[in-house]
Image (cartoon, rainbow, N blue to C red; front, side, top):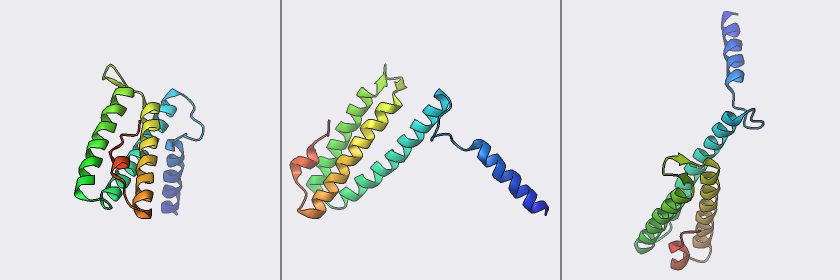
Length: 124
C-alpha cells in the first residue's frame, strides 16, 4: 500500500512539472516550448543530414558539408541579435526549413538520383 501511495505522489508531482506547451501561461512557458521544439528539430536535422550523407558520393558529401556550414552561418546571422541573444522562433523556422530541404534531397536521391546543384544549395 505504501508503494502505491508513493507512486501516486510521484505521478502527481510529474503533473505539476509537466510542460504547458499546449497552452503556455507566460513568456517563460513560450520560451521553454520554443526551445524544446528547436532541440527536437535539431535532432531530426542531424538525423536527416546523416541519412543524406549515406546516399551520396564523396564529392557530393563535400558539397553538402559546405552547404550545411553556409546554412549554419546564415541561420546564426539572421537569428541572433548582437551575437549575444538567439531569436528562438527564427531558429525554429530556419531549422524547419532546412529539415524540409534535406528531406527533399533524400527523396530526390532515392527516386531518380542526387543532383549536384541541389545539394550545393544553401536553402535561403
